[in-house]
Length: 230
Image 1 (spheres, one colour):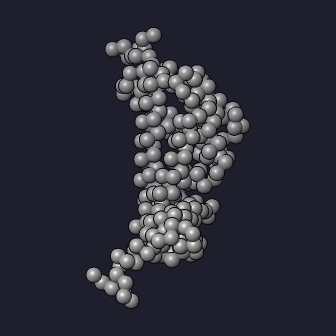
Image 2: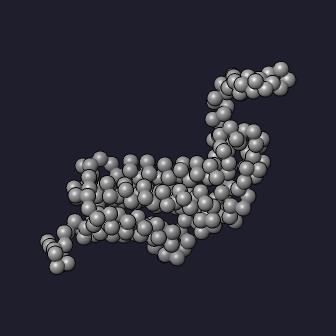
Image 3: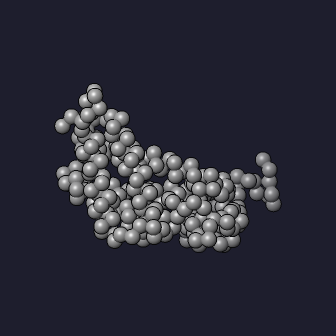
């Protein structure tokens, strides 16, 4: 066992978890992780781009040494993933909660979910940048997580269609889910960038109407000659 100043490395690790200043070591470690996440999010989503996002930059802004960074994250890439995942977790949980139970009318559930989604992104520019900023597409970990979150939302939309809409799982449902998720991302991104002039309530209502219209089309099974069968 390697010793430094009479203490083993294992002793040093245990010492970090001891109570200090009235707080257990595990609590202090969690506080440091939360601080690193907050600073990482700030630097990653800076309006001028993520150039300042690095282990050194995060530690400097957080007032922590690299030693404390590496107790929570392997590298800056892992921190970037954690920042993005935290954003997606909030959006997913709040949007699903807004839909209510299965007894909610489809129109009301859709408007509530889309309204929550739009507000979560519009009210926090950092979320919008994490989801849509071209500058962050150059960060490999963010690019990977964006793809993963798209797949997640497609799965959730398809699940809602088969559960709430009582539709059988099919390629048509998957096509509809892909169209809805990709379309909402494009519309909300254009709206945030100022390329789409529309009031928030009208935006949400229009998105909800489109969602329901796509659902109606998906629900109709095509005949063998390609014509829809009512």
